[in-house]
Image (cartoon, rainbow, N blue to C red; front, side):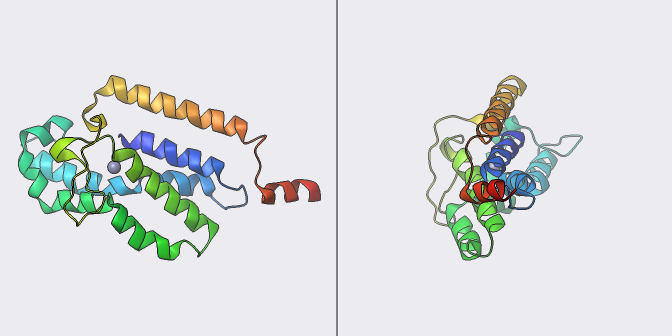
Length: 182
Ligand SMILES: [Zn+2]
């Protein structure tokens, strides 16, 4: 799944969260994107470099042409950042800290859950990494061209707008209280 779609899913979760959580949209959006930081700073530059690209940043086809990336440490860091086991170890202890942390925990999980079905075969996610079990997903969103990516971004953006509208009517108990005291 592309990073913008992930960001919009996170933004939608931020919109759904109680309004008194400070910076809820920023938290949702940034933690929704966060797992892919390993892709942007490690996997794509390294793979772009071994693929001999002028600008060292790999495209989707480079992953197919250079399957040795699957055994490289940069790819393994990416697998780690997309592991539900890693997520549980890092975020579950922080869950009780604040409601902002709860939102961050859910937004990060949304990223992994969206990527699990959208990577297939050897390029599938390892949901319990470092336990070597590859989940064979249903489709390869990461190989999509600009057209399907645009469809994905626009449809997720529309979902966000619908949720924004619905939030005028669906309120959390804390929001009801602040309305009555106003
Ligand atoms: Zn990802």
